[in-house]
Image 1 (tube, helix red, strand yellow):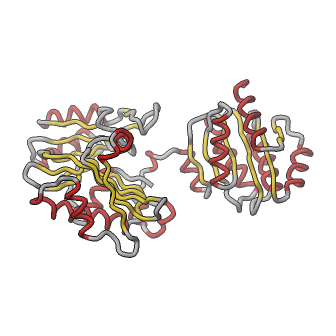
Image 2 (image 1 turned 90 degrees about the horizontal axis):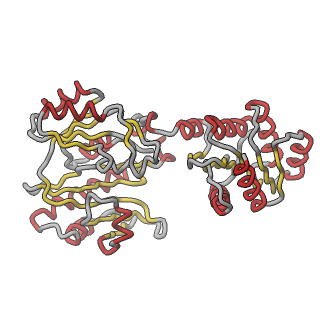
Image 3 (image 1 turned 120 degrees about the vertical axis):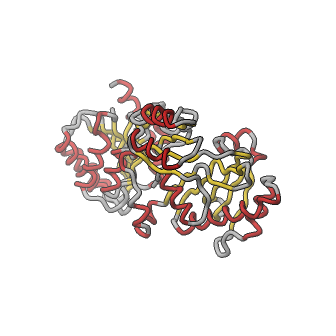
Length: 389
């Protein structure tokens, strides 16, 4: 789960991490009042969407008067921002952060995330603050500094200080920087974050260390422990299909293509997406139906995949274990009854109750359902049918 920048900053502030003074607003009138309340010569007007790259897309404006604050607020509210992370459809700006400007001396990068290769939390720092860290890692990997954290000990003060020195932070500011790192790490652990990122982390001209921007992502599986975090969810920022699927307990991610995939098991689902791409198709989604669904639940999964006309074909790729092939077959039939589906549905069933599942589909004699023997045959067939559509 993601939250907005201003929400992340409130969390950081509660942990003693220094952030600029600011206030979220939903109208130009509120923006003007917030700017007057700040009483600063320079005010930053920042679009609040769940995507990075806002500055490059024109979503961050520097205002040097109340009139400019009003002007920028009117420009941004209701605007659709298109960034590298939003995709071509962009995201509509429904709220802004009105924030006090600061005199920046240096911009750095800092984050905590999980390194799956070592099964440890890693603190990542870079002197290339303000830039997209993926670009930095790709073009100048020597600028990426890592500190691995023992899960039983946590971030040690000496590690924070070592990171500060490696970032060439001047000695007079090292303790402030290290304290900020310790605070951000505590947020990362206490709130079950999957990512806690400050970009840029700034050292101001008056030698303060401050989080100028923050991104906090949370582990969905741990949200039951954090009702305060769940309350920050902004559903208008989420894909409606993903939200609907989550309510049904389905693992669904919209990938934007036109070949829908219904699979059981995350590994098989990823392999299915890959093989569709291999045969020249564009996957519409990642969908893991898990192992406990009923025919009715499977039919609901079909509804999510096919609503709004995105999918031009469906590949059902099931290797039955806990999930039984006959239940999947009944779900396909139920979906056709509910949705009057006309698009091709290519079905590969194997594993538990495979004979029963194939027999159910054969007897149903649904014209647009094509049974295949293998995953390879299925992927090739569904791509071929979608291209002909």
